[in-house]
Image (cartoon, rainbow, N blue to C red; front, side):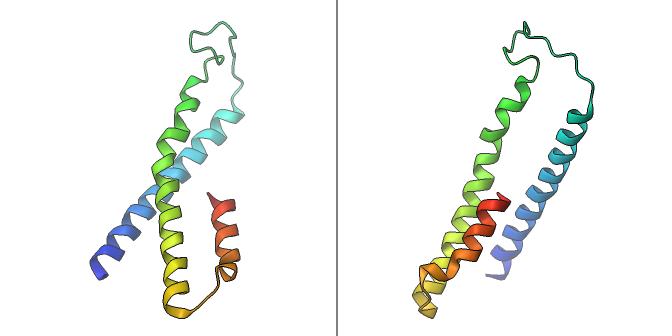
Length: 97
């Protein structure tokens, strides 16, 4: 458990750092005075690179959902908690991700 937890935390913090960098890039792109061309070959005025991001983030979102469901299942099975007791965790996950 010690090794796997450390590995999961390392990968998660690495993803968080990448997300921080990506957020900063988007923030800076939003501030630019862009000359958007409707006739650009990517058919989205030259912003086609943004359409690939959901596919890249899908494993990250899936991994967080699996970790949360495992945590909630552990509490339900071994501590006798109810699923409704995890509302806060589920809400925070939905808002954060």
